[in-house]
Image 1 (cartoon, rainbow, N blue to C red):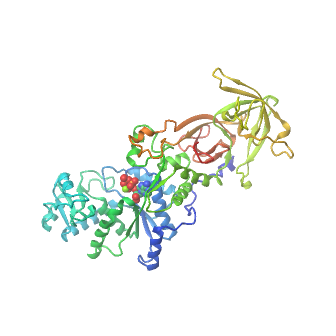
Image 2 (tube, rainbow, N blue to C red):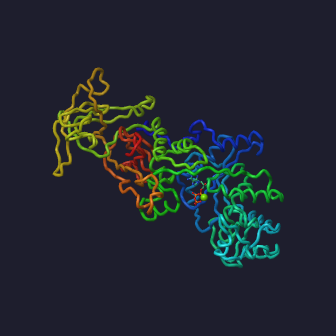
Image 3 (cartoon, helix red, strand yellow):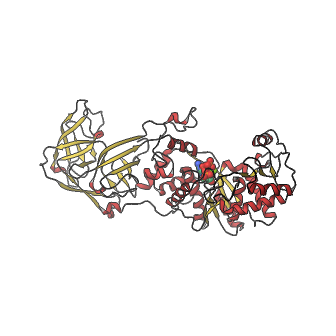
Length: 570
Ligand code: ATP
Ligand code: MG
């Protein structure tokens, strides 16, 4: 039915999820705007390394960076930090772009790659050498590590630290020209081997790597390192606020040092971008490190990067999380410097809050038991209807049949009910939503005692909506055998049994939840016949389900359970 399709909601524009709550980053930006520091500009960037799929933590960073640009009328760049040719891949780039757009953000003209700046980065490196601020070090990696010192112990100067500018230039050019094997030399900044900040102890900025780069091919056999590349890339792009996670706090003095040197020699224009750190997002009952996500995929624990149990954005999307729900989640999580550990329930709550006003309703029976209504004439059906959305009549009504045979949820019948069970019991009555009250007369079981058929009678005077019709306490969802469509339901639970699988000791995989996927076969009402993949529905009394974007098609419906109706498991 077309009115069900009209409920499709994904891809709403990335409007602020809620009035933006102030935070320390906003305060910095507002102060800069007030003082005119960057001439009124707010330019941020999201700088993923294209070496994996994005996860919910990245979504947080995307929402922060693109959200600030949106709220302050600035812009946000998407920059691939592609300085490590060994681990990077165009497939990851494609997926990252797709996910940023899916979240509702746009980088406009500003898609950049750190590799766009390889020439400039190289020229600046020679400039550092010429100023006596960089040298080629020929110590082995082990020697370099040993001489770096520790928090307690200052480092030791390299024996190559005082090479002449000429020798450094010659060696660096030979490195560039492929004259030296990997590991033979690195280029280091000459800062201070005794600095209390280890990042300032002559950090390496270039290393030799005979590897093909996915964009620059074999043009380079030396590659710049992250700390050197990142600040310069920021400055070249006119980034005003370079927002990153807390582990970079101790790198900030190096970020500032490099840019200050280039500004003082006129290579870059002031003011330098300001690096600002916030706490990374962690979510309970999951792992987020790229290595572990990759391991789960590679060892077949999950079906792929887009397995709906994964906290990857492709996984969350497939499960039925909407862009708006993820933006809402990120907004609610807020920005701070304090360690941030957020319960998975918050993510689920955001999805419910997003879907409740939008998702069309439908009835689905995931674990069916047949009910035969014995006083319903054989071969006769009646057309019933229900609102597409209970709070929005303008969305119209959905129609379905009722007949002699209906399917109900196994869990809605108890042969021997416990106290307070208001659904169907032997001799008891229950309302079939939008239909009639039925009474259970008897039931059949198989040899194992499993209920196979319920025999019932209905009361024709109790049709829903009939003025003065009597009612009963329980009302259950159902579908008619006459028009229900078969469907597969994939019910997901948390991938791990414990909130923090990393902190439990042993291997994080020891804490996998063996029951995190349950596949059921049942029935859905006929309005779902053309359910567009990736459309979300509220299956009445069951939760929010999404037509699987990979496997679901007309005639072969597959629904993923995204989240239950209430907080809590299942
Ligand atoms: P890697 O260990 O490979 O660097 P990463 O998760 O930091 O992994 P990046 O591609 O470097 O991956 O991340 C891109 C951006 O996303 C960075 O600015 C990073 O700080 C941010 N980011 C990554 N994880 C989180 C998280 N859990 N919460 C908030 N921001 C995050
Ligand atoms: Mg990183």
